[in-house]
Amino acid sequence: MIIVRNDSYGVNEKERMIYLKDFELSLRFKGKLKWHRKQGRLEIIYDED
Image (cartoon, rainbow, N blue to C red):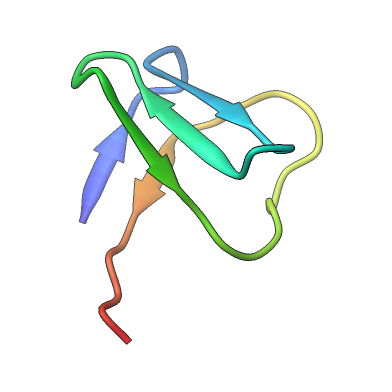
Protein backbone atom coordinates (compact mmCIF):
# COMPACT_ATOMS: atom_id res chain seq x y z
CA MET A 1 0.00 0.00 0.00
CA ILE A 2 1.21 3.50 -0.86
CA ILE A 3 -0.18 6.53 0.99
CA VAL A 4 0.19 9.93 -0.72
CA ARG A 5 -0.46 13.40 0.74
CA ASN A 6 -3.28 15.42 -0.80
CA ASP A 7 -0.92 17.99 -2.40
CA SER A 8 1.37 15.35 -3.94
CA TYR A 9 -0.90 13.98 -6.65
CA GLY A 10 -3.27 15.02 -9.40
CA VAL A 11 -6.14 13.21 -11.09
CA ASN A 12 -7.23 13.36 -14.72
CA GLU A 13 -10.65 11.72 -14.65
CA LYS A 14 -11.15 11.87 -18.44
CA GLU A 15 -7.92 9.97 -19.18
CA ARG A 16 -8.32 7.79 -16.03
CA MET A 17 -4.81 8.74 -14.81
CA ILE A 18 -3.36 9.60 -11.41
CA TYR A 19 -0.10 11.58 -11.46
CA LEU A 20 2.20 11.15 -8.45
CA LYS A 21 4.27 14.35 -8.38
CA ASP A 22 7.01 13.17 -5.98
CA PHE A 23 7.66 10.00 -8.00
CA GLU A 24 7.11 11.61 -11.45
CA LEU A 25 4.84 8.66 -12.20
CA SER A 26 1.46 8.32 -13.93
CA LEU A 27 -0.85 5.43 -13.10
CA ARG A 28 -3.96 4.35 -14.99
CA PHE A 29 -6.95 3.52 -12.79
CA LYS A 30 -10.27 1.71 -13.16
CA GLY A 31 -13.57 2.27 -11.43
CA LYS A 32 -15.17 5.43 -10.10
CA LEU A 33 -13.62 8.12 -7.95
CA LYS A 34 -14.96 8.05 -4.40
CA TRP A 35 -14.79 11.79 -3.73
CA HIS A 36 -16.37 14.78 -5.37
CA ARG A 37 -14.89 17.86 -3.68
CA LYS A 38 -11.56 18.51 -1.96
CA GLN A 39 -8.81 15.94 -2.47
CA GLY A 40 -7.81 13.99 0.61
CA ARG A 41 -5.12 11.45 1.32
CA LEU A 42 -4.68 8.92 -1.50
CA GLU A 43 -4.26 5.21 -0.76
CA ILE A 44 -3.10 2.98 -3.62
CA ILE A 45 -3.58 -0.77 -3.36
CA TYR A 46 -2.26 -2.86 -6.25
CA ASP A 47 -4.34 -5.89 -7.23
CA GLU A 48 -2.91 -8.20 -9.91
CA ASP A 49 -6.29 -9.81 -10.65
